[in-house]
Length: 293
Length: 307
Image 1 (cartoon, helix red, strand yellow):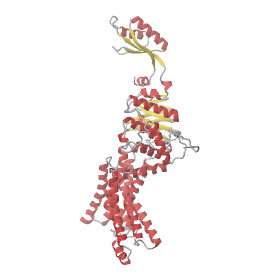
Image 2: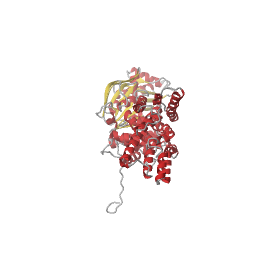
Image 3: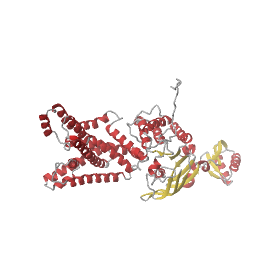
Image 4: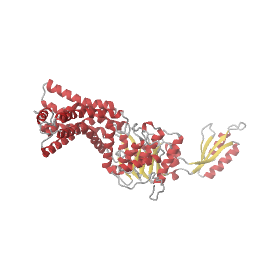
């Protein structure tokens, strides 16, 4: 209705656009957001939501369980002292979700990468301001962001829950320090898992095979290294090639903990993670250097 | 709009484009040629997706290799491949690509809707792409190409897989977006007839080489002879072949297969040809079924090159 009460039909229709454009930043942001939505099944049929939601819930379970116990039993000083001895440290919590994290890598990267190659979206993306580099950047942001749902978010939830149950870090300064360590270690570990799984998923154009490739890369390397170090008595440094445990070990080192492999120096742990990330990025770039043209 | 100099692209030992010198003015331009002529390769280079082996190209005044992202923000592209994310609604698909091409989120949503209405899919815009027919998918490809208001749209075989009615509608839409919204269009096609119907300009390729380029009006349409279709009469056997022989004897170029009733007659002057055909028919006592002026077609350009 107009101000004078008359009905009005506004037929905008297709027209020229002279407004502001979001450029490359907008293209990367939109592609990353769209990929993340697609992986989580948002805007898709219910069956696409089941697997990711289930894995995220499983990844959250340890944090929910410990926070639940703390909320139900805590409050009394004696009980709190007991709980502090039982509940895991903030750097150790992600290890409780390791199975869910590995499963999630097999789910996220194939869905984010392989679909685009199979359904023609990749060549369409490359006809936009996105280049192969910025396309990969958008995908790394999407997959890394999604990985943080199972690596980082449970620990933040754990920190908040423990804080409300009076079992969190002492004082505001410590609390902020822990929060920063959780965020930095969680983001870095998510990024390493994201890059490794994306590189493994890039070797095939079939989603099921890509999931298999990701799981095999993660679990295969883990098992082989376990056999080499514990069965064949090789140097503990072989564990640096373990793509599943090294990001977890890095989380511990960022918190200043000795971790599960105290005999390996922190600088080697960081170098291992950087090596996995760099090699994965290299493979990813090599696989995409001519894709979609 | 597009200018290329000495543009070559070699895959292994196979030259996909061979030293093309092309200048494409604004309007609707048909990039024509048989399958494998180099049309898609040319479009890839124009978009900055491939680096040419040699030569230079400029699109909308920009270098596709150095200013690719800036260029592609102003170019819409409809690929030949007819595969989409099946479970995505058409409106989400068009909106997302409009956003990637630079539209703010709110604007992208309304423009996606407007573009889908424009191509005739307003009522179907919330349907999943996987449930759409080939014709509807071609329209969605056009809608996503224009949703971000580009200056130039590249369409690779936009009528592929369409029936004649759908083809007419698609060609009319392409003409409309050029005329009503001043969007320049380059469409690739191996169907010469559809290019002749809607294009202002033509770039014709054959095995990677430039066959012809320029305004369609300059390349085709000139009257260059007569097409005549004759009927055999029982009491004058061989009259059709006799007409053909008389015209050849008069120094005219006659395209007439043995036993066929239709012939194309070419000569220096259209009037001279018409007079000669009339006289030959009368002298041979042949019966005329149809006679019409023969206008030069794109097909003739390709036939001349192959000859």
